[in-house]
Amino acid sequence: MSMPTTIYPSSHPCKLCNLTAQAKHTIQDIPYYYCSDCTLLFNTYWDNKPPLIPEQIAVNDKRREERWPAGEADHMYEKGWETLECMGWPVAWWSRQVHARLKKIPAYQTWVHRSIKRRFQKVLDFGCGHGISVTELRNRDGMNVIGLDPFSPIYEPYIIRTPLITHRFDSEIFDAIFSIETLEHIPNILEIFRELHRILKPGGVLLVQTRRLEDTEYKAKQDKWFYLEGPTTHVSIYSEAAMRTIADKTGWDSVSFRGVRYALFKKAPDR
Ligand SMILES: [Zn+2]
Image (cartoon, rainbow, N blue to C red; front, side, top):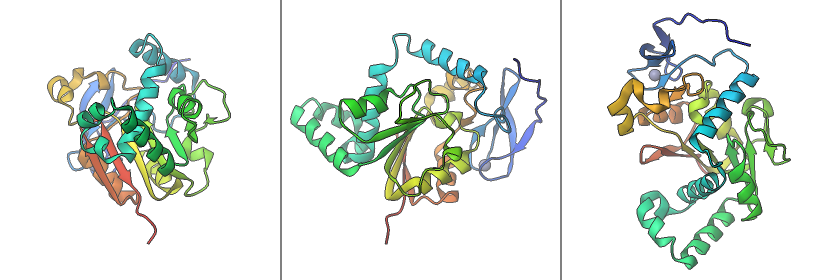
């Protein structure tokens, strides 16, 4: 099965602010459009295509194998905790280096984990992949974490294998949502952020990890940046300004940034 050839125009309305975005990089004949206003970089490859074709699952699996040939278990488990700590522990958010040093003290680590478990009673891993962090956070740490990923090959009751929008969670059920290396795969950005906001409790937090355009590797390599190597999987590349635009348009109280990969979106508490 192969995709019909698409002829792409040289400009496209920006997916966030609707102003005209111009083609900036063309990789494998697919243009990435850049909006000079909100500074989103995106392509339209997945627009109006069904999300669940086997071809796409195969591409994702292949890339995952190339990246983590020894399997992703510990890497993803660590990442899951790192993400929760960034959401829930002020030191981790202010300075990952200081936090990493303090974590060598077992009492500090226990204290952090206990406080995070207390604060985040119900957590969603949005784009959980093979569900390693979900499974381990549940089994090793007894946390109530569920995963969602239409591409997940794992059949477990706590892993939902349908797209977020189709699944229709109840409103305001999660204390926290984290999303690691997922947003770059999302074509319907505003719809997804509205939905994530809806399912979070008031005062809830969303922590996303995706490479942003502020990355020095992008500045140095441009078209050759590895994040743009897979235009059929990486369709949306964000910047701080793009994320601020998203926060404004989809109801968030604030968004703040940690390095060039993490962003923390907060939903306003009930007043
Ligand atoms: Zn824009």
